[in-house]
Picture 1 (tube, rainbow over the protein chains, first blue to last red):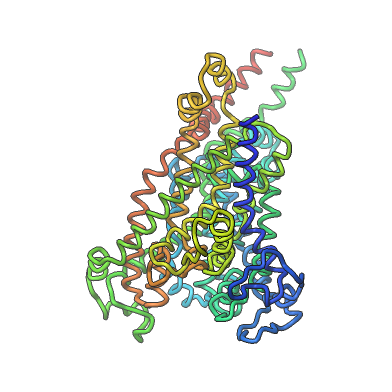
Picture 2 (picture 1 turned 45 degrees about the vertical axis):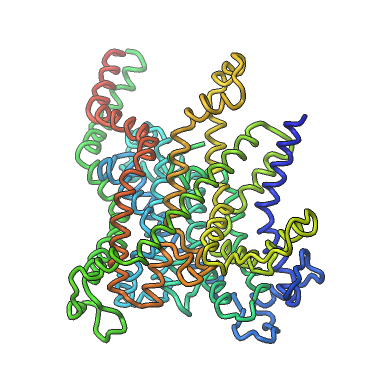
Length: 283
Length: 351
């Protein structure tokens, strides 16, 4: 009995600790300005629920704050985030699926290639920022969709390879061999026989890669300024612009940012561990 | 004549085509398959690496008035490297990053393991609670930084909550005014807390999936033989979980060493440089000090360090996946000519 109580109490305490930050941003998004962070008082719950913060970030209403200089309309950045994360995901998948199949089926590039790809993940992206900027300014890719999509695709490519590889390995070779016996070429066998077998894996990998691209902050911070500034960067600019804090709109935007990864993440919950451990741990 | 014989004869022709495809064209197909990915990697590695190495030997900045390839005008040999390696700022950034990583991974492991043990047995509401504990992991790291920026304000909810607990309820202190984001000796722990909050769920998920997969009869046998819970943990569970624990710890450590997003929104490396991780330090030298030559040298040094670390860190992950790769390696030669002959033999026997 005592052990069960101990268990319940520890789960409850830890659960509360892990939930509180989420509770805070959730309620902050619905608080009116005078409840955000008044001096010497903390509003644990919103006293006057309001949708103003969401109206502001979706550009329906202008900020009413007295000391607000920064515009809070985030529709542009949200669209930029959607386009660049989707584009980067498509690129990473297009390159990653083929590479993964090459590695899983033909051991293309030798046994070292997969680990070379994995090691890329260990480099901090900020370390390649300077040459990237130089290259991008030459190619006129700074602050463009193509620039973001290219780098997103390259950065999440290792995840796509490793996750897809773990799915391809599970497909028996006999399936592609049978297709070849039936007269398909290697490519036909791949597209008609093997790919349909990993449909679930494809979807999970794409969603997983999308979450990673959607979550990027650093690359967009460096490579975009106005035209294609993404939502996390906009969130940051609200933070540094406001001497008077923009907690409410920031929280509303943060909440909007959390929703897609949370929904997708829970949808592919079974594959999260596999993805984040590069397929080393399969459930 | 029996039916199988007919079948075997009818399949002769495709077999020949099969041999041709598997023999010559297979490596061509393999090369074509990996080509787009290789191109993509070339784009982010080859050119940037050359440019970074070149610039790291110079004092060039974008503000110096000449284009990057004219950086040789500001040639400095190894001065930038020497400055980084002999000065304090670079090493302090490394030290802070290592402290944050060690603390964060240790706590993530301890809390994640405890949670995984609590969640091992089925109980009412387990799957719902699992989702609760997974949520922080899905939060965009920059947003996580912003959330804790609100929480850690001096008159924010964390200090207010501590005041309620320690002052109003327990009467042990006065009002709490901890400078989570302003006290230089504290900020790196605030940064660490964000990482712990966000990534303990991953540790929990990995360890739970490991625990679930443990062979139950061995645990049952130990229980019957009278091993206590702690003994079971120490002598059975931990040794069996070792490979998984290793992978979980390594993956978290790699990611924490790169820490930037949440740290930037939380403190921007401040006050001063008190919470600058290596990534934050690099960002600041690039965009605030705009010392591109020096920043490139630091970046190269970091890449070298990470490569050395990475060679070791990759091994357990490699070991975990080698199984399947070796399976393929042994399956490969049998697939080309022999399998064909075997099938023909089988056909001949049937005939």
